[in-house]
Image (tube, rainbow, N blue to C red; front, side, top):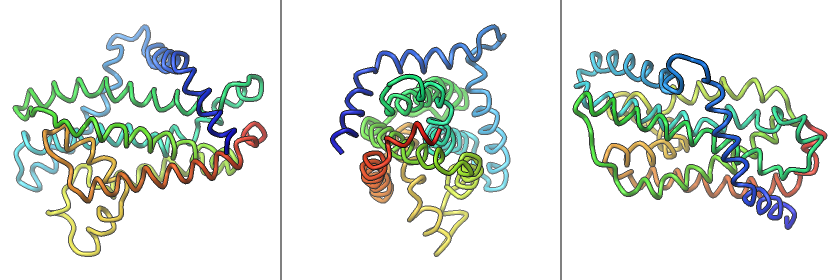
Length: 261
């Protein structure tokens, strides 16, 4: 376990490298394009607008209410879904580097999480511009300062766990994106519990859904609201279990990662 913490320490010491690499990878992807980095937010804006129009009509809600709710949920989930999407690829995509260089394994996870976080910050600007245009702008709650560390810690720990599992069992690499889509529809991101689920349905999609807690501790403060105690409990449980899973998995099998990739 000491070597796991040593790997973590070395990975944190390389923060200048993985921050630069994450920024460079995002910026280089959209170089020489007309819209540039606006393509990053294009999917979020288009999906949010379409869902807002559809569910606004079905539920009879005003666009000023439904658009911030849906766009905030998609904004948060896009970052959190790193655990199931990019997290599964984090070691596999770096297989060549892992086999030839002695970088700490946590370096690759930090780079991936930073890349998702930078995308989140970019989309956050577009998010506030969009809700300002529809007249739904609110002052963010200070609780976002508590929610972000909980979410980022969960992304690091669970991202490492999923990345190691996907390196060992390659079928997970292809299964995780499908699981991410399934969770997206089952989690109250573009719909609300009070109007669409009751009883045991509410328990499945919200009461025991850690992704709902992680999404809500980001979305609610962005909309100027305070996350419920239940959401905080779900998010903290996800973070704590992630730390435990990281300690057990990473300390026991980190040496095998070069052989798995």
